[in-house]
Figure 1 (cartoon, chains in turn cyan, blue):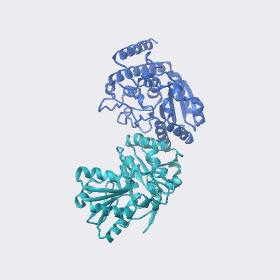
Figure 2 (tube, chains in turn blue, green):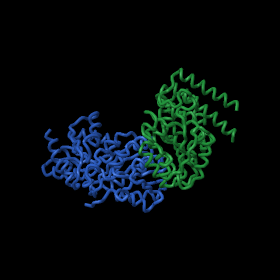
Figure 3 (tube, chains in turn orange, cyan):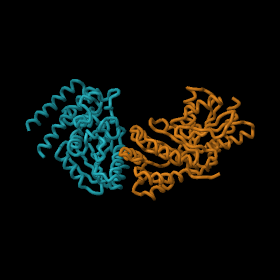
Length: 309
Length: 279
């Protein structure tokens, strides 16, 4: 299975877009090597602006650029985009409904060794709460590219969360459509809905469950906002038991988005795999997935428990 | 030029009357800073800036961004006199469904970008200035900030960046009325030495009397001649200027005049109008 860095693909996609569209400008806050906006900076130095360690300034400036008809891609780590510069994102970008695409890298605990201060696990919650903002959490590098293209094509603000680590390219992936989820594996006992790197874990859990004669359907839900309401209702009607998996706090992320739809339209048993009101810590990405109960094993165990309920 | 200055003075007095009327009608809002920034806004909208109410999105227009968003009544008055919308609309300030929101909103004709949360406006203006330079436009960008506002850290991030990017098409103005909500700036959080701070950040600094039209026009003219650095005009002003009982009174930072206060204020401003007519 091919492993790619979503952020590599992001940098390359920016160059492709930049070649065809002179309105594209790219901003970074001293992390261009890590976020890969440096790939764009090398190609189009006059349309790249490094703001130094000043995320608030970067994102309010992004609003000013977008108000002058620029299409702005702004990158930093998910932690700083969603927390440090939140007021700028809300009041300067989203309230004005401006064409700013925040592509944040190093989302989730799998940032790894840098520890809790750098592990954004509240960002989906925060960004999802702001009117006009759309939120995408791609499952692999190719989906990251699709997400960036969708953000480019659709007017208004976007938050795209990418991870730090290489991710397996999903062999079952289908074409990305903004606001739509889709099925990766068919099943009949329960449905697992996931986003981001936990889609890969969910697919491993699918295999483990299969060995125990449990047939789990696996869905990819890359767009958290707007959430695919129709698909969720369809899933709930079909399965009655749903497990939502995300590399995020259990409050406010994909689990909440799913629950908000189902509780009003088709209440069924829903549980989640996520981080339960705790901070992260240093460790390797794999160790952290295990420690916080986000790995395939934990997903399989939760699925079995849900079936017993 | 003397006639021009007289005309601008009259415009400023008219704006002050409208500020008092709309705030009294709204029964809330910020008269102090609106009145202290009146001449600055008058000079920009009626002399300095290239803009056209008939074509608000004209690509080469100069941009104005009110970073101290709470002083929007002065800008709304100026926009209505320019013809961006009918003057009667001013009486809908802060009312449900009105396009004249308590703080600037993009739906108001003539407002480029919403503001209100302090400290972000200089960055927004910086973005406009970068875009203007990328597009090789002659547009200039003007950003009006409050003095208390520059206590926000974001302002200094933007100050550093504007000098770094050598944005000589950017002109910021500080309405230095020496008061913020809780009291005198020197007591709440001292801003001095202000000139040294901006010079140290790489800006061209110009100080003037923010109520003297002639000095303001000179300041804006000089800013256009400065190359490879942004300019900041530190405009020394009086909070509540033009209404005797509001001048230097911190209570009127964020309190609207009641009916009785409105009548007295309008009478005082009418007296100023009459004096101006005699000149």
